[in-house]
Length: 500
Image 1 (cartoon, helix red, strand yellow):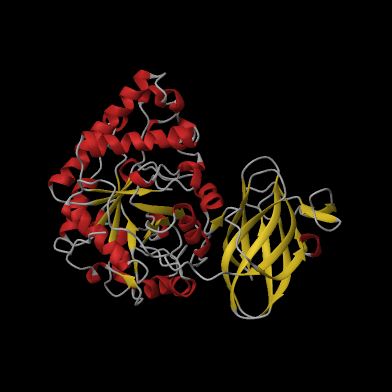
Image 2: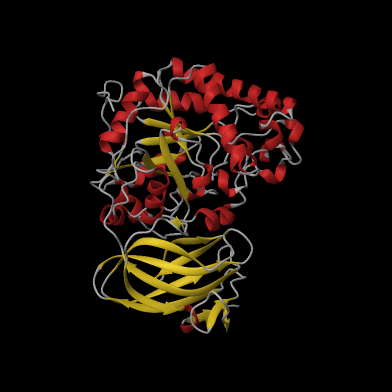
């Protein structure tokens, strides 16, 4: 998500779109053939319909004599009822068909949003929401329009398989063989902690001097986040041409000296040659016409020169952090599969080439040994390869005050990359349910709440906002025995480096 640059008054106008796309626990179908125990099956047409949803005559590929359609408007949904024999974890398998390409739609269990399911083949296929904790007895499951335009055949409920034994086997070995000792120390700590506790994190323009951190600290007994998130979108020629600067480097240095872990993202403003809208929206596809495929295959040589110049500018700023000994969880080219940022609007192959180009330039050409590379492409097909990735992250924005562990998404990422890669919640809106995360086995390496309205009231920054996460819930999270705050971090400048 990201993109809030307060000194230019820039705020995201696409929150609802992001919610619909990256809401918690999206699980794609076809995640392997494992023996499963079916405990319930219910036809969608037997459920309750809301809005435009209706049952219609069945056809080839559907069970029963009807299926449910009409997921067109925001309140369109269908709710079914089923029972399970005992209290445990279950997989909810939706047999659905997309009506024209990739579709994602919300799933509510007993009135609480648990995630969303994906279909894209155009055929009736299984899309599963895995490891949902249910008590014995009756439950209600609602499939509600997000992108919409699906047909729903039926719901099958299976008892979940045990968690993989190697789920938290993360390697501390960094992709850059010449990584700095401080980068190795931070990665070693993250891996040592993985599966045991979850680090708290907060994005904030001003780092630890921000209203976000101040209000968190004021309202939770003095606890501060262990991870601070910062923006590097000012590090490109378009930003320089428009006198846009940002104190991220100073904030990162201050945070490291304070004992914190720094993570950074990059809302890359496209070269002005390719802008079609307002310059400060230049990271959005809607404001840019950049031929990324032609640039990456060599047809647009000037475009490649412009991108390399931006990377050089970026390297200069990150280089200051290298000289100061500051390691960075570096998360570039994020949310690519969503398509709303220009680097993700031209398909997976062009994106992966760009990711690898940036990796090689920053690591090999400019010698930045302080970067821990976080991939956040949001889809398996966009993964550039283990040799370019140290940590795998995802961004999840549930609805207001909808708390969950996001276990299905956690397991989906594990399924994509297998054991060895640490998995983090690289951005979130509403904060995750830590008790549920412990119960479900969704022990994210860290969570990092986005800035602005997710923590403070935009109009009155001196007050904590309960719009997304209620104060009592935030207090519980920041004081939870399984959540690491700033005061609980070890001395990361002397932490023992793991060999593997």
